[in-house]
Length: 153
Image (cartoon, rainbow, N blue to C red; front, side):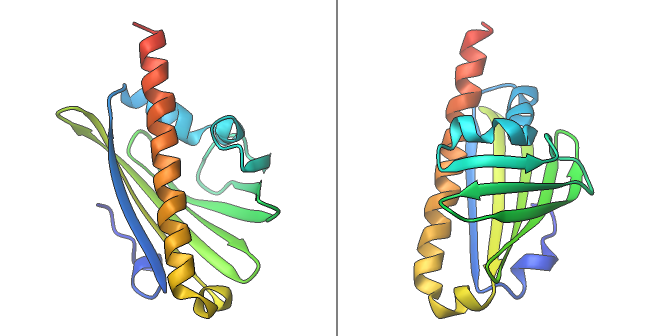
């Protein structure tokens, strides 16, 4: 997995999850980078503002569960990797997504870290929330990408 120095080394809460998706990389990449499409797969995301797609240096906002998260895209390597940092209510979250060919399709490897005073107040609870959230996002990406693949065959 790509280097994740800015999050993994000091973060209080860290989650790494992987999933193999049986769909073309182009389909997975399109779904992942289409920020405006995220609410269709993630009903908890009520609104998306800012950049419509993940592009280096752009910013976007998300409104899940009453939060107002502002994120900045740090790095995009087309069809390979995205990395962004988001901030809300004293929490800083860094998100790294890496995409690689796999015998059964595409391996999507994610590493997300959370840090800040609210995290320090409940490390165990926040770890559980991050683990659950990341797994949900991966499974929804898999379902959407594999459904798209079925539609084109």
